[in-house]
Length: 236
Image (cartoon, rainbow, N blue to C red; front, side, top):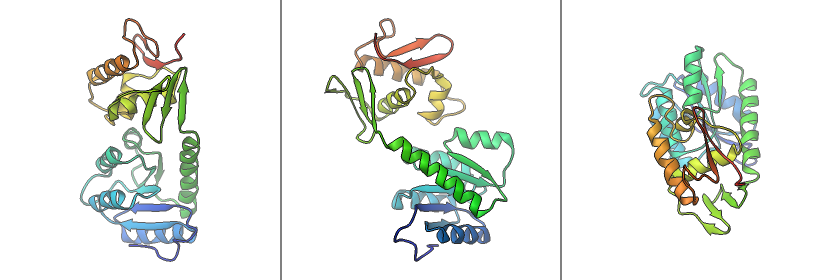
């Protein structure tokens, strides 16, 4: 269901995945009144197809969908897109909230909620996303990472990184100087909050170190904090 008449000057293009028709129409209509360009769909796979085809600015996702659990859909979405996602659902148990955030949700809103409250959350999430995108160049010493171009260089020489190696490097660079656990890396880089293997992280860290011109025994950028995790630092 398209809410028409708000394409010109729309604040954001929003994909609303909600199986309850009454709620879907109410929320879509209220967001459209605020100037947003809203697409509403009733099922998980329909939502995934719309995400890929239309590239919205933000997704509002219900978890109780008829064809697939919303958490599983969220993981599938995160495999193909970094679009901000606000989960809006009746599930209010702490484990469900944790599962959704671990799976990649940017915010979590429990039903019932007002359209005004949801719209305020949308503004906040989009503001954070814009702030993060303002300076896409990350610099740690002689290492330079162009987030938008997905390129990394040392002293002007490009590094030949796989997509996952780049994601790992970017995640560490965005938290330069901060110790990050392997569990966090599995959750945020590999989207495997539960049951993942530390060996996956160890192997990719080894490959990344080699391409950065270092090793675990002679580190430059990537330092291990034993029993805690790793951090990216400016070489001494």
